[in-house]
Image (cartoon, rainbow, N blue to C red):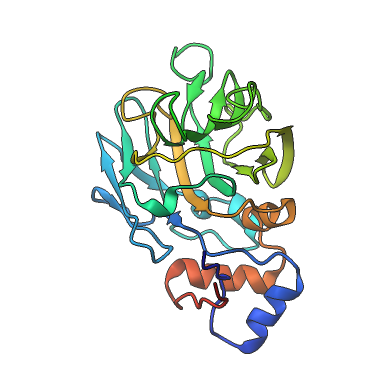
Length: 275
């Protein structure tokens, strides 16, 4: 599998400085920035062409980078970064590609701002921001910002308890939150705002499936996300804790500026690496 680092070709020192921090990120399989602002397509920024089609009356809104929180977290002044507000009967679909046959190495991450309170709406106890696989079927993996009021990363084919017992981090009503789930063939881990919230020993491999990827719901039929989603990633690597922290908040002002230019399209990403 070809891995690449995310860099920008401004100066050679750019990639050197990035590498020195020991937190180099692999190229994602999927990167939905949700910056379009209108329409029914969210483009894949990874270069793999895995665009998402939006369904229902979704709403384009200001994303995390357009808030004051971006100033403290990313070291950037707020800009007009976008996001999508999902809800009941509002979701997105990415068509299946065999690159998403992930069996023992994966990361799913995003920014999310939940707006359901987990008590009164009857739906917000189980909200799926990302899911791939048949319902409770072979190869299912999903990231849920709210499963019984906790963040859940779920992998279906592993030991009993690995399906829905790894729950860590209450994020209902707290505003923008970065969440991530990883699986490395041995353990499942959940991260909230760059910090490890919980982990569970789950050795094994997932089966594969050819189901589409759903964002904001389970199969476009239930487990609706009641809130806003931004910056969704899928990697075919289990990111380390340092890498997740790096994804949440680039560690230096130098990289923050580079990240901003990459995000804004000022410069194109440069890929390096090999097989």
